[in-house]
Amino acid sequence: MSYATARKTSADEIPVIDITPLRDGTDPLAVARALHAASTGLGFIYVQGHGIPDAVIDAARAAAYDFFHAEPALKETIRVSSSHRGWLGQGGAKMQDDAKPDLKESFIWGFQDAEGQTPDDHPLRGDNRWPAFQPGLETAAMTYFVQAHEVAHHLMRGFALGLDLDSDFFLKTADKPLSRASFVYYPPQDAAAGEDQFGVGPHTDFGVLTVLCQDNVGGLQVEDAKGEWIEAPPIPGTLLVNVADLLSRWTDGAYKSTPHRVVNASGRERMSLVLAFDPNPETLIDARGVFGPDHVPANDPITCGDYLSWRFGKAFAYRGKA
Image 1 (cartoon, rainbow, N blue to C red):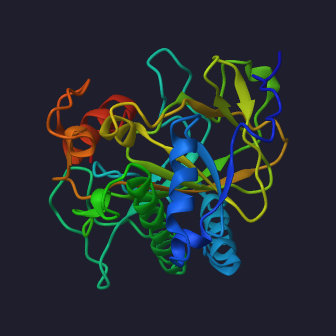
Image 2 (cartoon, rainbow, N blue to C red):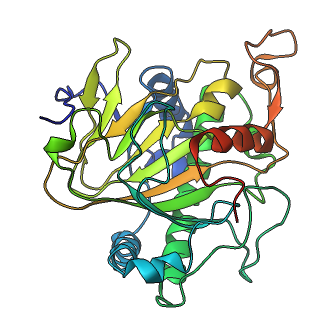
């Protein structure tokens, strides 16, 4: 048996964009144009100049490994809640009804204020479940969350400018975001499991924008416009960003939410640091806000909160359980 394979990516298929001129205001429009072109293409972008210090990334990754290497009984103390917070064990998710469960494990947390409090205004929002056996995890995780969230805000301003909108268009209701972050652990994958077994199976991301910090192991594969799987290897010093389903819907399909999957054929552990950016639950996703009141969108308007509740209910077996 063997692994599902992908061809090597050519240099122009997934662009590398330095967002420093967007972050510091020296030339935001040039970056916005590049982001727009990439988002209407494959929808995946390597981001340089993101501003997250290496020390923050290293601390988050080290804390994540410490967590996943802990005894299962300890991880069970913070098993994932119905509000999607805590540890989701192997086999807890599958991206398609007829697929094998994913091999990955995840630790998931979300927005909390300076006092550690979380708004109680949506089923996918609840108290973060920090492990008592690893008291340093909260600091490492929340420091990374805040920094990655800032990157997402810069990118959302860039997307708005690229669409000839006010820079804050996508951030008008984002003070209490539904954003989630996760440490995602992929064990070495046995080729004997077959080509239909994945670390995470083919899927598109549910929300607005995904900000991914890969390690040096590789394994991420992206489906191009021709239906061919290509590699999205780690590039040192970059984050990999992709348009997700809600941003595609918000732009009436102009920005592409592209299927991707993970095949960890390295023989080593793999760790991803993931931020799924989403605005407040009441945010209305309506393409007429982007293209004008006379535009006829393919999908009816829906709130961010309602859309995510629907998508999570389909993908995660534990939903509705305590």
